[in-house]
Length: 130
Image (cartoon, rainbow, N blue to C red; front, top):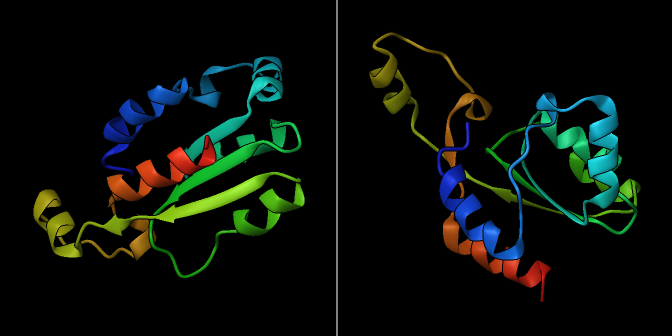
């Protein structure tokens, strides 16, 4: 889970971003919205596949936890003729997760909550619209 999503979204509003959960939309609504989307900011996960609806030349910024494998988006998104960049966050420590849950928890870095550096996000978003 992206911990500071609200902070990032508050800044992204400067560029008229709207928060949307594709799961709340019908397939036709998703397709129509995708055709109008010139830039997408998305956390890593199933909703990141929304890029499939975007027109060629659109931009995708993926906000991701640290991970060792599994992320195919750096290959698929550019193949769809979209601009792609990824910002990798800093995970909460496993000790914090265990403390919060009050039990032992085995987790890899991809399972941990993470934070995206606000300054890095701001600079890269500003550059996207420069």
